[in-house]
Image (cartoon, rainbow, N blue to C red; front, side, top):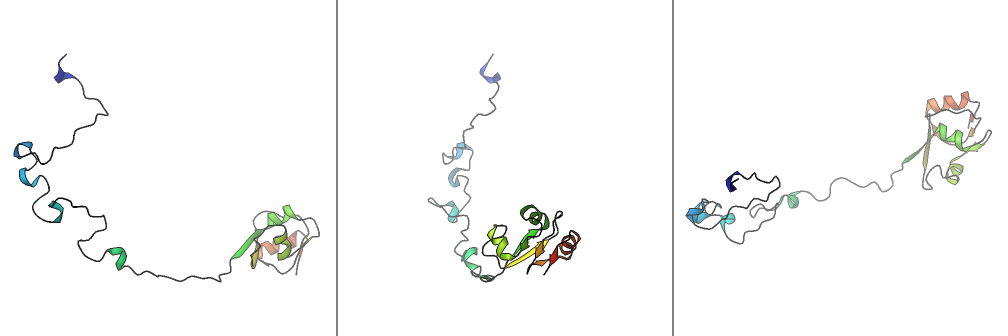
Length: 147
């Protein structure tokens, strides 16, 4: 077995090109693979990715304040019918305050809406809460009342 016939390792580290070692190195002689003239051909050149050759950078050309902030946006909390049937007994009165007390909605909730996901089989009394038409139908079918 000769040195020429030894197979190469799979994960070997290949030596990089030796730049700047004259014309015999095969890397272009005096320009050393950097091309001719210009900022990038000089020694000490280190520019960032977003450098644009003296132009005002893109991120500084963009407007800074876009859109608006809705500080007083009222988010609607959602409660499904199946959650009501799990957490309340027959004949219970349900209001926003009671939902907050049982931590079924956030304490900061202003708007609450009951949706029709799931089944209900209890007679509940609901006061002052918005609901979808299909949720209203399910609650009334189960014998509940809405005020």
